[in-house]
Length: 184
Image 1 (cartoon, rainbow, N blue to C red):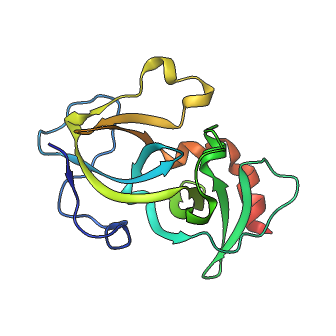
Image 2: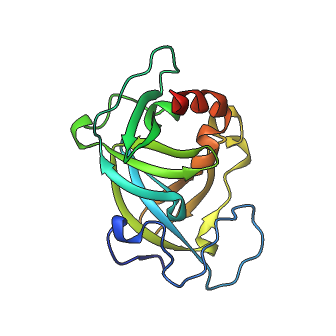
Image 3: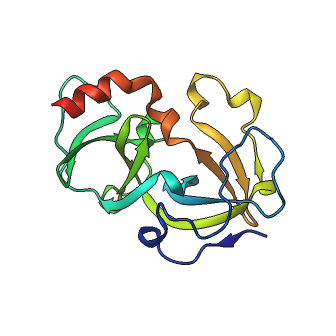
C-alpha cells in the first residue's frame, strides 16, 4: 500500500530516494515498483500534493512586497537570498473557499517551474509520501475545463484522496506578468 517517505520535507525536497520517480499521469504503462514522491499540503480542509522534484524548499510566510495592479492571487514578490520570487496564493488561484484556514500557520513552498522560482502560499505543508503509480488515477475528463487544468491526477490513499497539482500549469498563463515582476 501507500507508505510515507522518511525524513522531513526539507530533507527530502528535490532529492531522489533511489526509487524511480514518474509523474506521467496520462495513463501510460508503468512498472509495478514505480512510485511518485509527493509533497502533501493543505488548502482549506482538503489535501493536495505536488511533485517533490519541483519543490526547492518550504518556509514560513515572510515579508512579501505587494505589487500594484496585478491579479488578486499574486500576493507580491519576496527576496529569496537575492532572487526575486513571485508569490502566489494557491488557494485564491485555484478558487478554493478563502474563509477556511489560519493565516498565521500558512507556509510558502518554493517551486522550480518553467517560469523560474515561484512561491506558492498554502495553509500547511504536511509530509512527503510515496505513492505507487497504480494508485494514481488521471484527472477525470469533466475536470479538464479552464478552472481545473491545474490538476493532473488523484492519488488513492488508504483513508483519503490526494488531488495532484502541477505547479507549472498553475502559472503557465501568467508567464509575461511573472517576468515583469522579477524584472522589478
